[in-house]
Length: 229
Image 1 (tube, rainbow, N blue to C red):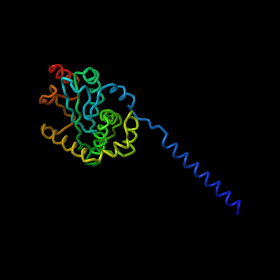
Image 2: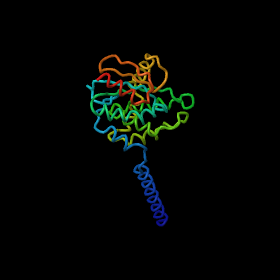
Image 3: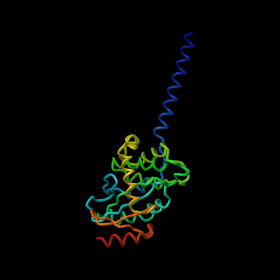
């Protein structure tokens, strides 16, 4: 009997060690996220306040209506936006306000876009909305594919310095986020446009006008901004 008890004790100890090793590996194993370093560098030192990127008193405001699952929105984010940030946002001349839409991919992956937007808005409560949004675009997958899982969002969130991922999850389903999404959808509907990305621009505090020319052309934005400065 003593030998049996000793053997069981050894087995129990081995089981505890195995579980501990598994937990340790799962919690410390880094997940490589495309664009994490690039996004951090692009946004480093630029003020963020919820939806707004840039100095609050910047003389020009751009409003961007986009969907996180929209391929065209990703194209703008990867090609045109970095130049606008470098030339105008970082220099204090422009601030950008993000407005989320949630209709891309709804026929094949319903709820995916909204789940992403909710997490982004919750990240905005910690002034990390733009970090999450740009990192999402780096890691965007086909719009017909369902991929916005808790694991996907967690991996992105863990790559953003200063973001409390659990807090973002808990706040993503809040009434405040729900209301924010509704208000942004109404604002987009009022423009009369139905496609994204879509942009408005104007002097800060004044009524904006629509940018109706190709939204991927940096020159279009440069001319519009310079005309307002």
